[in-house]
Amino acid sequence: MSQRVAVVTGAARGIGAAIAVRLAADGLAVAVLDLEESACATTVGRITDAGGRALAVGADVSDAAAVNAAVERVASELGPPVVLVNNAGVIRDNLLFKMTDDDWETVMAVHLRGAFLMSRACQKYMVEQRWGRIVNISSTSALGNRGQANYSTAKAGLQGLAKTLAIELGPFGVTANAVAPGFIETDMTKALSQQQTDALMAQIPLGRLGRPEDIAHAVAYLASPQAGYVTGVELHVNGGMYMN
Ligand code: NAD
Image 1 (cartoon, protein in one colour):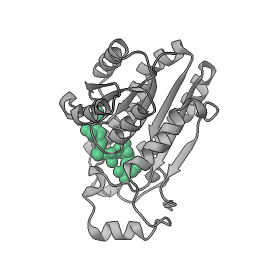
Image 2 (cartoon, rainbow, N blue to C red):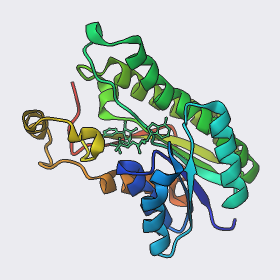
Image 3 (cartoon, rainbow, N blue to C red):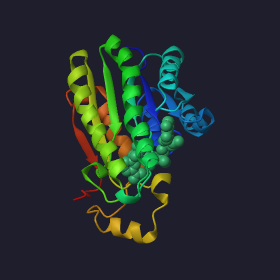
Image 4 (cartoon, helix red, strand yellow):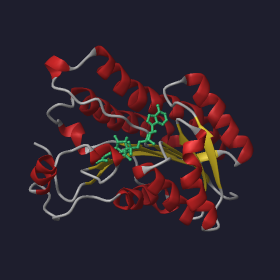
């Protein structure tokens, strides 16, 4: 196979950006996908400055037409996407009695419909190539987390999706796994108060918050040829912090 092509969703910043940069360092051409194409420029620049190949792609992962067009564009401009990292995500935290319909629908749409649409669009190329890797970014919150009924449900769903894709696509040489980050320092977690951060820190045996690169290394392994016999698993990358 010529240079492998990866698509990383939500890769304009945070964990997705770190994953895109790491996969490029491993020799893959990377489609950096996020809501706005212009927002992907920084990640693309980091990759191309280091001598890699990258393409900025604007698409809302919860929009089927946008997803199909984006994946077709990746295939024609970079090559058939054989690695997919479903990383795009949002939070709309609230205790159940205050959670609005929109809080619920938005989180389900981005995490679950997004991963479903992206996986369906990319699997065609993976099956054709008889080789593929799908990695869903789940969360420790899949184990249950106060104030996150929507997010916990979506993140547990991403684990179920990975297990089912592992069964359906395994015969075609495609693996599907989930990585479940703990508390990682990004824009998503910036909103936490010092008190909340201190409380979390007390639960982390390794004594530090996670970095986006901690997640990127785990994803890089699952996306590699060497992980070809690993499928349907959840890899927890959380410093030892398991909720519950
Ligand atoms: P972030 O908010 O910094 O980045 C998320 C990215 O996703 C943004 O660039 C955003 O524009 C993009 N995005 C949102 N909706 C989108 C859509 N509909 N279509 C395309 N792109 C969209 O978040 P992060 O902390 O880097 O999180 C990345 C992933 O890791 C998310 O799935 C998140 O749930 C998960 N996660 C994060 C943590 C953490 O502690 N930060 C922990 C566990 C899991």
